[in-house]
Amino acid sequence: MGSKSVTPIRRLAAVPPPLRILLAPDKFKGSLTASGFCESVTSSLSAKLPQAEIRSLPLADGGDGTLDVLRAYLNLRRVEVATVDPLGRSMRATYLADDSHAFVEVAAASGLALLAEAERDPMRTSTYGTGLLVRHALAHGCHHLTLLLGGSATHDLGLGIAQALGVELTGIEGHATGAQLPRILAIRLPAKPSWSDAMVTLLCDVDSPIYGPRGAAHVYAKQKGATPEQIRALDEGSRHVATLLRAFAKIDIARLAGGGAAGGIGAGLVALLGAEIKPGFATIAGLTDLDDHIAWADVVITGEGQLDEQSFRGKVVGEVLARCKASGKPCYLLVGHNALPDSFLLPNAARRVIALTGIAPTQASAMAQAQRWLVEAGRVLADHVHAG
Image (tube, rainbow, N blue to C red; front, top):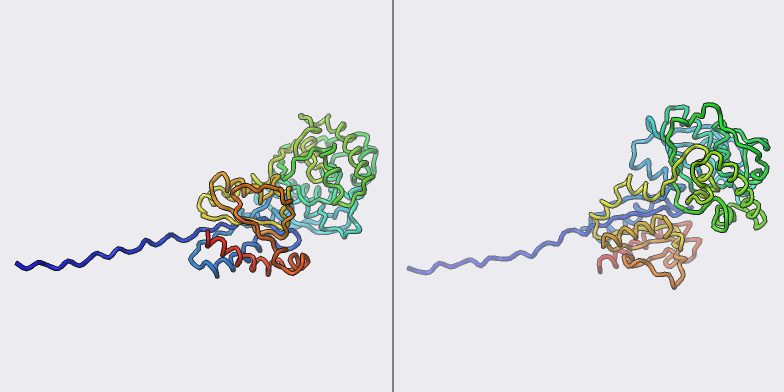
């Protein structure tokens, strides 16, 4: 019998799975939203890595810009309300809500961005406008209030908010401001507080106390327009009001981490409204299932407008890096400007930092045309990601 020929078996090379890339940035403050970051970087990554699977997960840490992020993930409606700005001028502002839960951004009515640079003065500004938004939400059936405490122009310990809800401050006339803190003689709650059946949550990304060397005035009042003399006055006023707030607080508000957030709103509303302070980023991370997305990814990309040491104190970039380190995932940083000192040691999950100021001809161009330079930075990053 003749032998049969055997056709050799051809072994096909294994096709590697597509690279999975997660974009998890913060906004570039004053230049680009977190969603805008994702759109810009996705366009350049897709062009250079066409087989990659890319997920966009815009993030925030509880400060200004958080409402935009929340609206993308939750079924919330915009509610527009007549209110006042930090100087008491009429304006309209919005909050987000469903049938029982309202999300109110302090910056919407009491934000620094609402004022011209020459108008910035925490001795004169008030959170009363934010209080009008809170009052509206309570009156329309929202029993869970979440206040986002970033970007305020104020240092009134949240007493303006409290006044809008019916709290009386004896010793002063008009809305509470930083200058009036030492003049307040007593604080009286209404007989039937509108918030008595409500749950009030405060999201913030700082741990500063209400007063002292690390307190609200010494750490944040300068960027709100305060002089050194005014900073000392605001700190003394905060100490004075803190003694009055002790009558309402069930905890030592002087030591309350986050009590100094947004010019002392944290401590004031914990004492007066029974609010609870929660870390902003952790809350947003839970709502967006961040950890599940990082587990899916092969590579994570995060970023923000300015990378500095504050970025690692509860901010988006630092917290994303920490989660990447814990899960063993490499993380790349695209930032507007890298202001970290050369001696700063990044977590070992950080593979590379690319700053727009290192690509754009000037820092002004990097800010004004952030979208353009992010596309370019994305192309540079794609080469590094492809090389592993």
